[in-house]
Image (cartoon, rainbow, N blue to C red; front, side, top):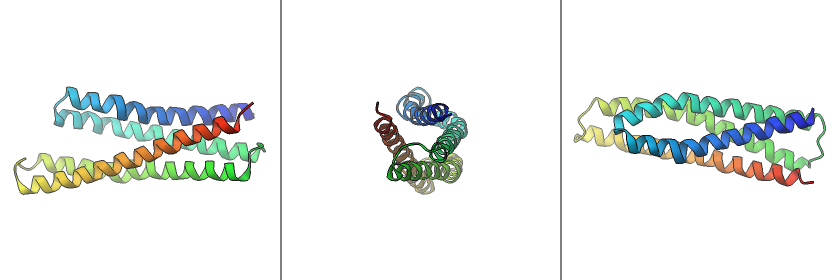
Length: 161
C-alpha cells in the first residue's frame, strides 16, 4: 500500500512540475513565435483550462497520497510531513488562484483589447493591466514549480536507502 501511495505522490508531483516546465519553456514560446499574437492568445486560452485541470488533479492526488502515507504511518519526521503538506496546500492554492481568478481576468482583458484601437490610450491602459496579470500568473506558476522541485528533492532525501 505504501509503495503505491509513494508512487502516486511521486508521479503526480513530477507530472505537475513537468507540465509547468513544458508549457512555460517549450509550448508557449513556440506558440507565440509561430503564430500571430491574436492567434497565439487564442491557442493559449484554449490550453489553460486543461493546464490548470492537470494542476488540480495532480495537486489533489499528491495531497491525498501524502495524507494517507502519514495516516498509515510512514517513518518521516513530523517536520517533514508538515513541510510537505504545507507546500502542497500552498501550491494548490496558487494554482486555483491562477486558474480561477487570474486567468479569467486576463481573458476578459484580452477581449477588451481586441475591441479597441491599438494606438488608443484605452488600449495602452488595458495592455498595462494585462501585463500586470501576466506577470502575476508567471510568478504564481514559477512558485508552484519551485515548491514542486523542492518537494521532489525532499522526497528523494527522505526515501534514501
